[in-house]
Image (cartoon, rainbow, N blue to C red; front, side, top):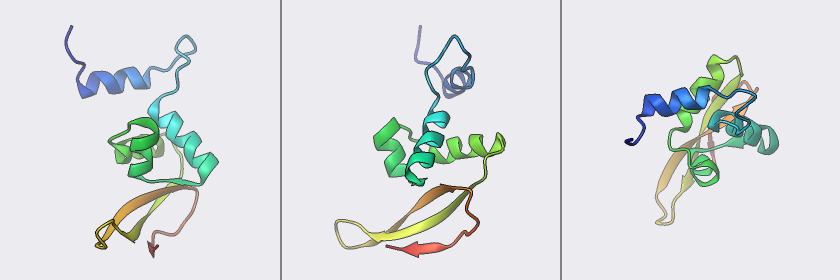
Length: 99
């Protein structure tokens, strides 16, 4: 028994049957966006240990969910401008917003 590959983990994640009631990362991310309005990669990492939010968003889009994104620009702890992507359910603008 070795460490599962990414493909094996994704196959396991996609096999969420009634017998396996543990929600997938994608399901948790969808619920988080419904409850909080949006999610960033930093929030996904902290809440779910999800290091590939863009991939999970892609999975949800393939399932038919309308998810839009925007870059949010902010200053980091050193005062430098940086940006992250914020994903939202069902909105139509794709703008850059400064915080």
